[in-house]
Length: 64
Image (cartoon, rainbow, N blue to C red; front, side, top):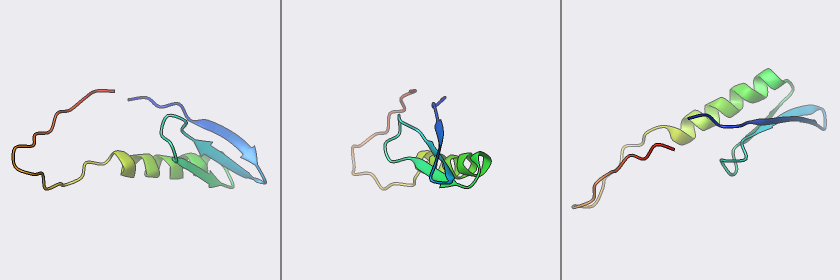
């Protein structure tokens, strides 16, 4: 999956945000650091989670 990331300077920091993932953003003194933090947040957001599902529930994977 490829996501567009917007990067801008504001108030002495660099902001990186992903408009396709609401609420996913990072701010840091440098672009490199802002992108590193954003990547960590995206990795956490999309990490598989162990779940206990109710009986009769199945998981279907969708490629987006």
